[in-house]
Length: 505
Image (cartoon, rainbow, N blue to C red):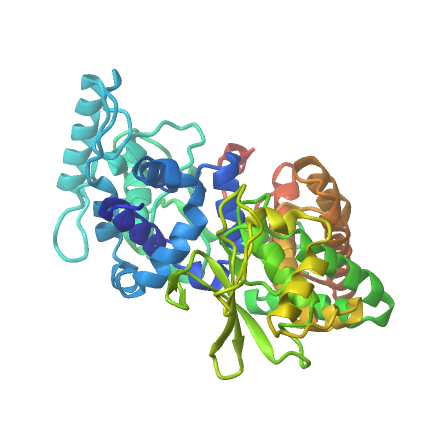
């Protein structure tokens, strides 16, 4: 049973995951699978800390995190919507104290190790310096908090800082530059600041001009402008805009799916992928893509599909998962309800029979078919279920492979299209070819049923790369990697000090 404290944490977690609704079945299915398998504790430090708080609050219920999140979203959607975008309110939920075992290591309120006296003094010193020297647009002075001050004080080694939206990243970045130049004597011309778009770059320039006075200023560029300055050809190849690149990817995937020469392998790959989803990764889905609570419900749903009761034009009934449903005056455990076209429940299948009980009896409960979860593991389950359904007055029709594919084709094709586009985007960022993708899959997954799908994605990846070559174009990832190659070479950098280039090597 999840208490009120844990429920508030789940609501806050979902409020922070702003793309939950649109990427639940793709991105977050993998994120949650990684979290529960131990491969990943969070995609950044903040998320890792929050997941740790959620885990402590859930206790033994932690393994049910995907189901608990779905339930929280269904029951508290309005609360999540109100909280979404309010970073301070979300953070406040996670800052609520929890009962923890005593620790010999003192920690700050943020969860980071507490500063020793000398570090604390340096933090206060930089806070005071900023408050005295760095004016904001509204007339106030910028006074960094402890975390921001530690970033400003970070040494000259490479440092990775992760921060949520609205946390003051721009001000902290420029304050660090101002402190380097005005206090530590760094050469402004040896500093390079990069932004993803022209608007962000302009914002950096304006604040740098205010906080770093003098004719010699740090270099402020977009990533693309810096890449063009590095490339010997000045970025002569046509760069696809972000939307244009996405359309090219989608077009390559669509052409691949529509190619009659690929039809057989596409069908095999997507069919195996649909059958492989669920169970091992802690997220159970039926062949039709419905989310269910257990492997036994998944087998039941897929068996009902194979018996022609759901998902086809021949079916007069449809399958739904219902929780806590009352039929014939009995409170039901998680059940599969066969619902007719009007939405009325014709038959419920109760998977809650106690292990070790005798054969469930249908007598006295004509609307309920009772099964044990262990029944779904029997090799003849489809035949036994068909007989019981026929006795209950529900006719069945065994579907062949073509029938099942017609039910699944649109869903699994749409699912593959979305997944392939994400795989291509990530693979391009990593500078992978199709061979690299297959090798990475073999190292980290290797599930045989997914091998045809990975091979398909690898071929689509190579087809996309060939398409760009034919058109003499490149996407942002391709240009960036070409710039990396030039950066480590002896090629001159247009308009940027040699010292800046050397600092990147």
